[in-house]
Length: 306
Image (cartoon, rainbow, N blue to C red; front, top):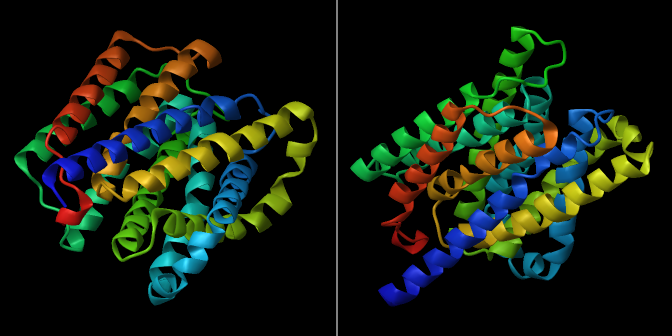
């Protein structure tokens, strides 16, 4: 494969992941339109039905890749477990600490966890460019988080906010893990559709009992139901199809770094639609995140080069 072809594939992968990030950035704000639905129910409905939808759309590819998937069954199951835990932690973080902080922590910490996972498996090296970009990105997410001055907390306490941050870190770890697992399945021979469809389908099944016990408020009004349908179909369904396509051409550490655009989108929507406030430090944080993305994508390496 020529270098020009690889670069085009890399660019396609980056574009797909950025598209997914834009869609995901709407989830926190969308959840605020169903305030009587618990974050656990929102997460279970969004990722549960979204995961089953992905599995249904990729059924043929899953059958074609069944041998590869069977040979990596442990990786598949662990990735699915990460998928099941992620939305429960993510939407709990948003509920406790607000849309901006919850999204910034959940997504902002993921690149570090991804890099550590790849470092542990010998597929990542801390280059000077990566260190500069990641440091800039961390500074950006720190400024963005500190700029959030009207967090939506359950009881308005620091304890609730700290608990929300803890949930965000759990979400970041599980997000990094299932992204890494999906990338490893894809580079082991499964198509992106088969890897993402099987992993998300299994994760969706794991979330069905949670939805059964917590999801009644989703049916209490048409507004709540529409929020659930939107979350499952657009950011979770379409978004993760784009993300899976991107993972075929970029490493998980780069993919999770690209999704730093998600908290930017989430923060802008939180300011204009939810009424949360953004200070000048928040704007500076957004600028630093884009500088981070520039550093980490200007000389990318494709997955085949690992």
